[in-house]
Image 1 (tube, one colour):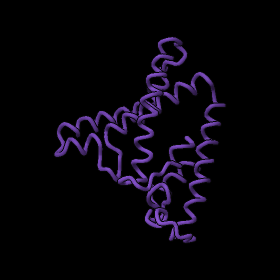
Image 2 (cartoon, rainbow, N blue to C red; image 1 turned 90 degrees about the vertical axis):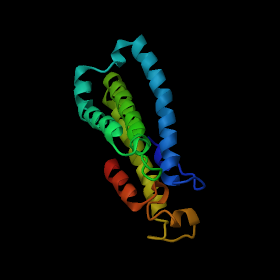
Image 3 (cartoon, rainbow, N blue to C red; image 1 turned 180 degrees about the horizontal axis):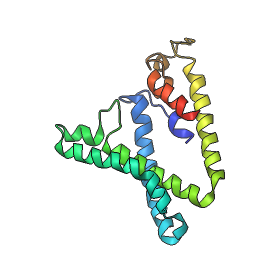
Image 4 (cartoon, rainbow, N blue to C red; image 1 turned 90 degrees about the horizontal axis):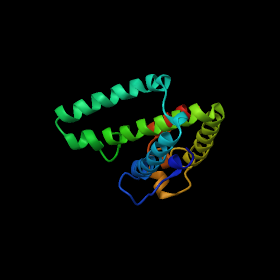
Length: 169
């Protein structure tokens, strides 16, 4: 929650997206293995009916994405999206698994975990907002990779940055 928005590797292709996307997917893969083991060992970590109903809209979105992958014109783009966007089926499946893991953990550990997550997201948003002020659209400090970001600093562009800040609030 804290690290992902702050990651940025300016020497990568589509640095604002790939720096975060590949890290997130790798972490989710590791967490999914650990969570599966935990759910087998302790039934409290298995998702209940209430959690599954809450995840239903995301599940329906993924089903529609699977259908469009097979009947669409370009399967590779459906699976992986474009490098600049990074919201293909594979990433969306990782997001669903991550959401299930977080829902499971909140179910067992209570709202204190949710509060900690919210605080971490808010902290990251404050840091990213601070860095965003130093792009050429605000206070130009002459840092090349910030000035090439289209106003979003380490998030890539101002639209993504704005969406992230709204989510954080």
